[in-house]
Structures are given as structure tokens and as C-alpha cells.
Image (tube, rainbow, N blue to C red):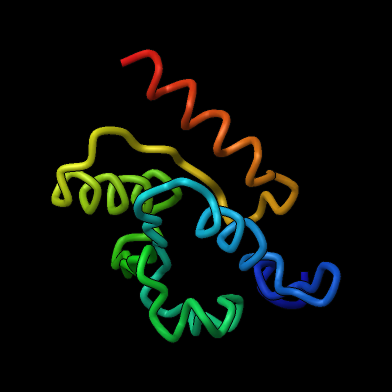
Length: 112
């Protein structure tokens, strides 16, 4: 690709912001966004950059070590927040739906 994948437009929105907006509109309590330290975040929608109340941005200084390093960074943040459960979403999965996320959340809540 000639540019970062997350800024590629789909229906006028950057690829990276689509699943994030869906997550923010879902029943999730918090959404931790893990980005590498050099990412200019041009793929994030403006309301997230303005500070959406559910969104927590974490810069991963070891993201060049691979996706596992980013996962560890996000999980460490979740652990620090003492969350009860974690759902891992990828920014390059724009076709996940809010309905599916809410259904998964409901299934997990009824199991516990």
C-alpha cells in the first residue's frame, strides 16, 4: 500500500475510525485505543480526538515488536482500570456491527 491502511476511506470515513465508532456506540463501558507512538492518528474521527468519554488512548512504545506488544499494552491498561472483562477489536475490521458487539456483551454478562 502506498499509505497507512487505517486512513483508507470506506464510504467517506477512514477505515480505522469505523469499528472504533461502532465500539463507542455499543454497550461497552470503555474503549481502549492502542496506537504506536509515531501514529499521527489521522484515522481517528474528530469527536474521538476531542475526547469521547468512553475512549482511552494509549501509545504503545513497543508496537514495532508486533501485534502482541500492542495487545499487552491494551491489556495492561484494562488491568489498571480493574475491568471485569475484555473484548479485543481490531481497527481494520469495519464490518463488525454494534448489534453484534451488544449481543456478545449480553452473552458474557449472562454467563457470569
